[in-house]
Length: 322
Image (cartoon, rainbow, N blue to C red; front, side, top):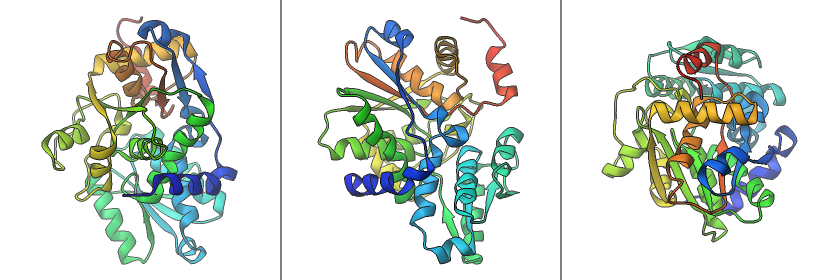
């Protein structure tokens, strides 16, 4: 098991010059809907518009100068790739980001914007990731996983180190779950403080890979179905360390529907006047769905990203508004 207390604190010091300490904002609307104090941690305001910048930079900064000079390789559907590309630009290093052939053009542009080379391979995140790892090994380059890496996980855990300073009493935290890197880092740090905080993993029912893997006791393979939460879609690679971490550290798992994600996104956008992506809506939906279970408790919802494309926004708005 990772020593989360030590590794997250080291990550916080390491990445401090390169990231924003994102605001924690009281949500009047979500508090009203849940009859409990709800705060939102605004990682949509992070550099590149996503929490992924934290883990990517922590990994890049943990590499030797020689490793960075050889270049790095990453695989991503968008946010992780943009984060790696941003980190490389900050450090004056170079790298390649592999994306699935069906990756959204807006997310690809987000990666290229910071200077990394983009190559397409495969039509599924797991296939793309496997190819990227092989490419890195063949070319003696460091591979930066979106989630299956201790340094990446520790970087994501810096959200929790900020959170405990920003909120004196924290009872429950709601986190969206894809590969599990975000929730592993957050839960690991909170539990390292001997905290009684309840960690809730929120998952789209159209992409329940981690949920079903934990339910069945082993990593499973499931088809990818369309979801507003493209940031949490995709499979888990065999042996992913996040599987055991999520088993050990996450207290509650909840599935949310596409309708619940859409309602959550629209509710947040109308109340907070900010754009968010589907993965952030998943955590909000989980908070709303479990409001009876956590009534009256101080809750934080991780707004993990704000990178929503115009096509996705149009689909979100097509239909009855709130």
